[in-house]
Length: 587
Image (cartoon, rainbow, N blue to C red; front, side):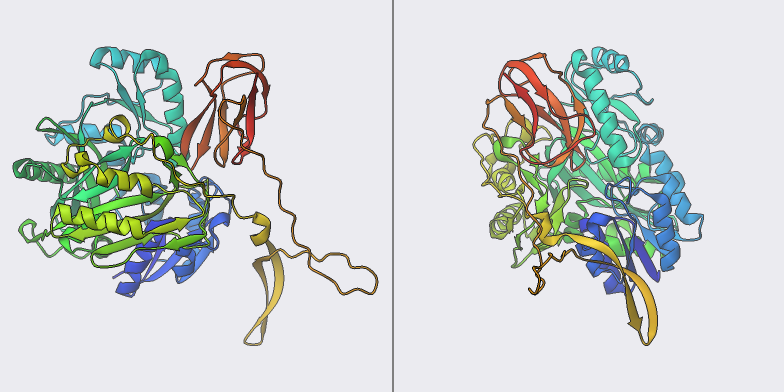
């Protein structure tokens, strides 16, 4: 068994890996950005090393900083989690070239399957058909238009080196091609470090069914069951479950066998997921995620297998020790992703901020995998997943009712979350009867009347501001110069003869949020302006996008509710803004 594992990730998945490592007696090493120095995964790990920087590019996508942490810690293995470098062959090779175990597939398998274009070719070679699409990277909007005219609109633009809906845009007409392509490339670069994109036909009412596979280095590849991930918004999953409801067993068996063929075609080892779209009795290969999935707990609940444990065992060279017929399956499991988003009106607006209250649910069959506790801050610079609530029941209806109970017990304050939307989904007759699809949330589910109570202003950063200071410490009589993050408490100048007092840092003034249609356009959240689409003197229509705001790795259009003339543009690309900041004024 491995001795010390460095988790090259953050948040919920880092916490998840640390817990299994502890149960196996494996030491853990956390890495962290400046914003994450007090994060839950840092608090739980046996050791922690600073990467520096705030954004993902400056920290969790900084290969040299991670390699330095591996060397300093003496870790003999690296678990990449999901996102960031989890599907980056160059990173995996940089790890293995140093004689350190990469807890995942071989770099060569990542190269084949991590690139969604080459994975389509590999699947076709294994006799598994994919959704009609292109197998070459797209570099010109004219290629999008030509594809749409050949196969029909809408067209899906996807990140070639990513998944989870990041970097995916649906193009409904030729006039949207250039803007959608540019946006997809920006998101792909920000989240996966690669801007390449490709095209697929967009199916109008499919279900998203994926197969969990597990392979060892001794020639054994198994499928552990399917997951239905059809409840999505912005092409990102909200609710997952296993087994898939109203799913024919003959299709299940055929899909499982197809998943094994795809995995074997690229020499896959360790845990992975082969994803399919299912419509009208037919299934199509979508992609293979060469990593652990966010929704892996539902498979764990119905099989009783700890997938992280098996990742570690396989990486240590152990055989699986069981066959396809030995894979147990019992009952039904549902997972809800709790994201820091405001679902009011069905908009799902990112909601970064500090969690002031976090009371988790409890009771039989309830599991919560969270990356935050009360007092922790959900940053605009990272994914907004707060945690995953998972329940098990003896059948689907029992699991659905248990999930509703658990969601209503959960209390999170300080940031808005997707919990109200999750309750609306689980309560809907379409979900109860499994009549939903990947387009159901956005096309059918009516959330227009959903209003989440305001979370209130964020805590004043001055109350918790910290500074880096160099101090002298003695450990067992030996003197050390160390650097510590300590609360910033400036000393006020006292009157002659008076005792010194501590000065409280003044609260920063906050911009007021204008009412709808006032002509003063504000942003609803903290983020970075990535594109300004208007200039002073331009005439705009109601509903027109004036700028694009990136928050939590998602691009959000900022629209005007009033027609008129632009009199002021107060931001430029690259500017950081906060909730209520004015970006454009219209008269």
